[in-house]
Length: 192
Image 1 (spheres, rainbow, N blue to C red):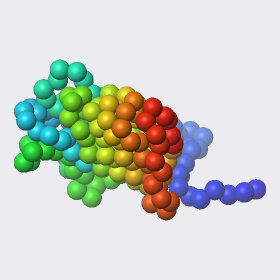
Image 2: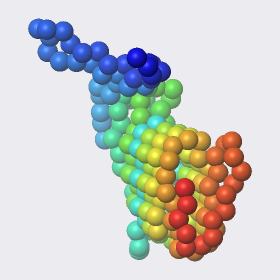
Image 3: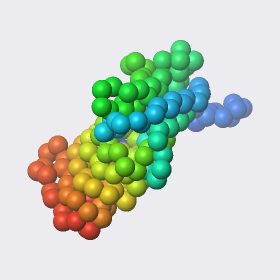
């Protein structure tokens, strides 16, 4: 019998008990709460997103004049949950949306609605990532699947692991892994 690395521990209840305990990646998600933050874009020239663990979805919207951030925080304890925060603020010429986890075992599944006219710079640590219909994108992702579609301008992706697809109707599409050189793909093509 071939054994897999112990990344997921599953303990099933014994006869007479009422269920099972599942622990993925060393922590559970017993506590949840909603998080939200909005900020007007004004004359900002870039939106920076610093996401941590959890899923991330960003949707560009025509005519939108603010960044709307909503999500569900998740942690194993109420104490950890209270330390999972979401902020959105103007910093110089940038709008900065940031997830704060303060070294907890928490995560935030985050959804952003952004103007489709302002370029994005996104840093994501883990979890699935979906970005649709934005002006331009510079993405640094550590792990998790990536799906990018409908980017009007340049796309740059630096990916530590995971898989994904990228499409851009114009501009340069590039993708790199930390261990391989950047691959440039001509406009109107799809690359992984």
